Amino acid sequence: MDLATIDYEVKAGVAHVRFARPEGANAVNPEFSRDLRDVMLEIEWDDTVKAVSVTAEGKVFCAGGDLKEFHGAGDGLPRLATGMLTDFHSAIYKMNRMVKPFVAGVRGAAGGAGLSIMSSFDLVISGESAKYTMAYTRAGVTPDGTSTYFVARHIGLRRMLDLTLTNRVLSAEEAESWGLVNRIVPDDDVDSATAELAQQLADGPSWALGHAKRVVYAGYESVLEEAGEFEGVTIAEAMSRHDGREGIAAFVEKRAPDFNGE
Image 1 (cartoon, rainbow, N blue to C red):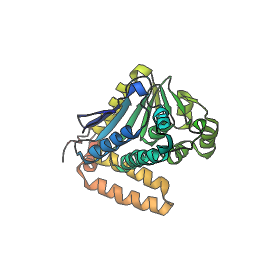
Image 2: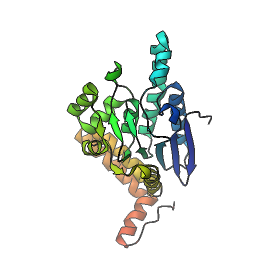
Image 3: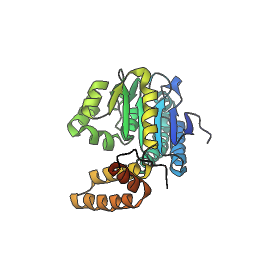
Image 4: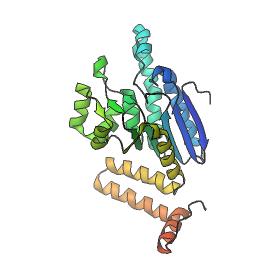
């Protein structure tokens, strides 16, 4: 891949995605959106990837949309935004539908589209001094980046309206208590903690973990009977596979499971 704004490599079953435009606060623009789409395509079709770690260079995870570039587009801005969001949203849809867990590590700040994309990842590790804000209406625009889907589900409608209409800034502790992030670590440990958690997932029962992700998302959107039926079908298939048989046997035999078999 020819990527200008993202660094990408795969090691030991983990795809390491790193936003790499620190001079622009890793802000979202058309180039970044295309790169993100291409990265998601690569992850989807690489069977060696079992889990994904997403971090960022510099002091800011992602400052949101690139307002300087937007301003420079003049009357062409609506067209630029439409094309950019086609790629940006496509990348998020693809990531969410993949049976591979994504772990994000946030240092500094996640604002606007940065908060949106952060909220679409499956698990989030936050630096202790990180800040979180919607920021869209401060710039006279409305939310994007699938924030109205993911952020609202994580925190609830009242809190979503609070963030959206007032541009309230949340600390890492508030973000954790609201359900936006999973855990907080020292700022200097964000990258290593994110990579370690992704590696832990990659080393686990990958089919079960990936399809557990799918079951949870599907169940959240389903009526009771549909959720239960999908759970039943999926766990039965898990039990027919090596990892399911091995995990059950290891528990009964009081030993560590070996999920690397076939």
